[in-house]
Image 1: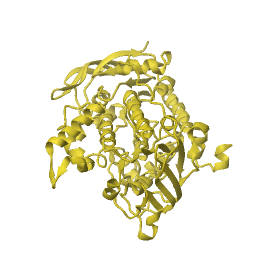
Image 2: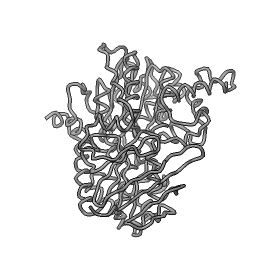
Image 3: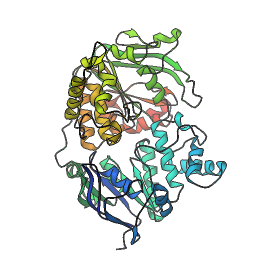
Image 4: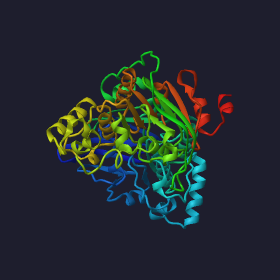
Length: 505
């Protein structure tokens, strides 16, 4: 066998009392696709930061092509041939896509734009190079990050959840491209919570638990359940069955909703008709950038309608088009946005303060004064019940791993006991054990009579959760599809713009 491209020996990293990585040994072979598996908080993100030069280890050593490797910055890592797409993106929102590219690589505006368009078509990750980043959805920003890495011609490419923005048809195309890259000499570190993807694409897999390596194996020789047990150290939670029931009253209705956002780069919505009833989970599938953000802003109350269109949105029995987010929440509405940091939580504030943002009306504020003891109790219960891995209620939101912050935010919203719950990307970046637990909570709420709207790019998740699925493509919503009577292929055709007759064919 050839010598490893990258070797780690005894690599350790601590943040105060928290030891994120404990004596990690890992070899990445040339021309290989190597998975790193682990729960949220297992140390995957820290390990990738060490490999990409964002952080430096406290102990241990790295070797690159057999020579000692010490990286002082991501720029140095890129010069050595190591590129990474991070879970939290590193793009300047006030610049265009191509302007962001010019910050880290040589070339003129037109040349870089042409390379981006060409690579985007090859990978099925099209994005307009001249759009400002602030106008892009989370999924579109991930596409830019992937393409930016590929434009540096890396020898080691680190991909964190690279398929979360793709319909099934394009996942196959991406995997073919990754295999071509491997065959051309590029090694890939692949982080994904989709265990069947790991089995399909990866040659080797290293499993982390509590910051330490617990094993390295060939994933194709193990089924998904076995990989899950190795990863989380216990049996997977059993799915909560959706109790048979007739849906109740309509708690959210959109009637012929048209909306043209002020942002010229945003997606207009056309004739949106949607119903979500009590005791029902309705899902919206689609590739990022097709109107999900615009629809979420209208349903949540972040964007309000003009008076003449106020009756286009009904919520819990009354028109709410003119009502803002606070008034909609007062009716029994709860919302978890897909953007965790910035919209779901304030990074520099402790968790107890972040709980107050939406739970203040649950007895945490009395006569205008914060009841800090109740706020801490509420936060502690959320941490306990939703298995949020954190030192305590005073930990800053920005210090949590992405998956743990996700668990905190969705736990906070569920603890409000809403009548109508809207969750966007409920398990984005969350490990398989936590994802199963979150989905179980949503189904249990549905069984209790809560109306739930879910926007997700995970088709498997939508089929597991939903009674009804719509597809959002080009700002238009498909007819309602009964989840039990449709297939991923039909959903995928709608996602790629097919008309109803073509999608059903």
